[in-house]
Every structure is written in C-alpha cells, then in structure tokens.
Length: 70
Image (cartoon, rainbow, N blue to C red; front, side, top):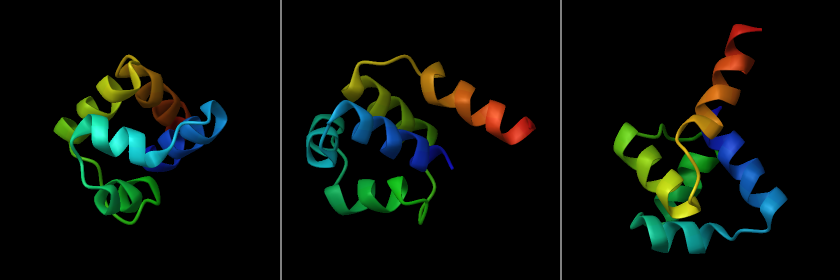
C-alpha cells in the first residue's frame, strides 16, 4: 500500500519514476516493483525515496496509517 501512495504522489506531481530511482540510488526495475506493491520497501529505501522527493518521511507514512486504521 505504501508503494501505491508514493506512485500516486509521483503521478499527481508529474514526477518520473526514473528521476526518483536515479536520485535515490535505487534501480529503476526495483523501484517499479516497490511502487506496484509487488515488493516491500525497506526503511532505508523509504528514507532514500523521501529524500529524493524532498519530502518528510511522515508524508506517506501518515496517510498509510490513516488508511490502515479505518
């Protein structure tokens, strides 16, 4: 679910996955599987993605928590 939230954010902001992958130092194919929820996202990867997007780590985590407590 976290991957889908990040993917939605990228789409809304017009940010390419390739840009995030390069800036975060994550292979494009790995990032793609994360954003499709076919693979989990480690804490380290999550921090790298948030840093690449220049957003706080709570941005996606808070929304994810809200969706999982409803």
